[in-house]
Image (tube, rainbow, N blue to C red; front, top):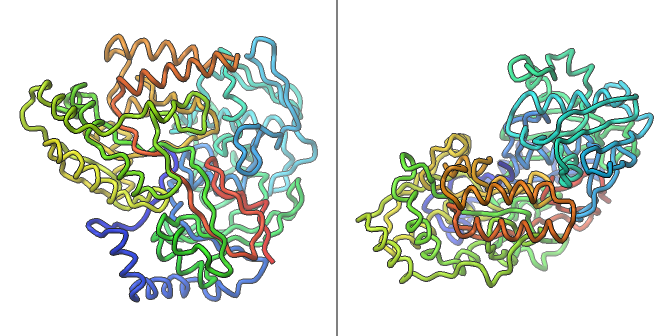
Length: 547
């Protein structure tokens, strides 16, 4: 799962109270402490870009093992993929390491021509063998990102500048998938010298993660200089990058979790870019001299999950209880919490993808109906535990506040919820292990294509974590069939129709209550140019300059 914006625990503290505390002096002390940790950030000069944010959901910098958006941000800067996207346009795949590609008539074979004379930061030349090795390594390590390669039968390297990807079935999403930093080309010779393995036994044999957490092995515009977990990442420019050296010499990314602290630092000039601000900061920074504020619609769904394994979910595995939860939630209040620009989502597909449902189909709060459904379920008093990451921030909105809102809403229909806020590392692992009875999570697109939301299909990644399997009933079996058809359909109108049908069925029968689609608020100093924000990898630092 991607795109987790983390923040310090604020359990029991409202956003208004938090900002009042910071405005009253506590925040200034925090900002002074952070600024002191890196001397003279404000005076760093045009050659240094200082970025603050909560996007430190980084478990690893190893491309073969990562699947968090914070890591995507770094790996997009330090590695290159066959395919990319420009700016905030995530609809048109563009050449990157590949100069172009051809697709076989049956849609099963993609042939890529590599850009000649590209070198890794080690000086080793990039060849098709490196690309094949890198993709095979992701497949055989069998980490969180392995599902990206579902349906890939083989990767071939028939000559040094040709890569062939063969699929078992047509999969039009393969081009967006190959833009993922997970599938970047890494220096196979260098990484093998440091424990790397891409054989079918790589899950046990590959020992390169520690090396890749401390060194870059890519062709990217930037090179990793230092990574201090949960604190700071420093990148320096690659003077020999195939597109030409980037304009910024050095990038310092600091883990500044509190949105209000970022607000103060961007005002003072201690940050050049703030990527973890929230709705309050958008209002407070509007019109501030020297600061530009923008928002970008996130390819993200924030939702409540209800475990369908009776041994874990208990009463929340009952379909009537699932429906009651959906009708109990105050969605307008949730949107107000999420901030201006956030959108209702009628299903599991965000509004900026084909297959999304019109807003009129979204569930509306109806607490009388929720109470009636609970009476029909006839389960007596219903209690449950809602698990979430207490240090998680969804685009400036603390998970604590969303959890408190859900608890209050469910209480209005008689469902008593205990909040179980845990550190992110603990909470996410419990979720991935399928042990959350109820949870607040989000799914951010791993690659910019609607097929990424097939993870909500019974038996696939998110559904499996929620205990919803293909044998759950006839509706689940039908959804599985529709998903298979949608995944391989190459005719665009037919593909969109299949995804809409799939979306409606999951919205009706799936164990989720979609809460909202957030916007990403971000700010930067007015002397910084070329800042864009794409859900796939956040800021693209290659396009950024500073005067």
